[in-house]
Length: 246
Image (cartoon, rainbow, N blue to C red):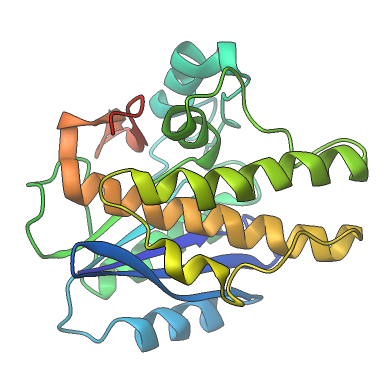
């Protein structure tokens, strides 16, 4: 089974991409990349996963937006459940500039056979897509009291927060189930955290995409036993791991 994470650029900015594969009971990093255009992202997906192969794609973007205005149900529920962690998400509606891009991306995945999976039979091979949200996933997977604030603020502060995320990924994900193979984490897929703004953003996108891919794997492995689903197919939905249970 393969697991792809897409930290989708909601407007025109680059997207982080991660490809994990479940081999011998462990998740192994096969690729971490960053692409500019939707066409390049789709080509990358087609290379990683052939048309007949099972895979689940976790996308950090609202790919289902049924409402013309206001907020979706899952957006509201993130504030209800995760507001205390500062992990509520931005509202999505069809009137916002990014909506056409993110919804079309979900449709492109559906055209490739990746069906939306707000419910799933654990560990059953298939071709699925889900919407994910790294901030609350990070809080629950790593047992934190608030989000890691690596997206906004002074560069030096963002870098320290990103170092924390890097350390949590390398130290904690190998101990969870399914485990991320620790031997691969020392390779060039995860470089050291840089000190300049543009380079830091590149690593941020890549680490976010790794979290997206891991959440996809966690959803496939455990289903609703160890995950929360905020919303449903008709309202839009977000899959978030429950608090960590090693």
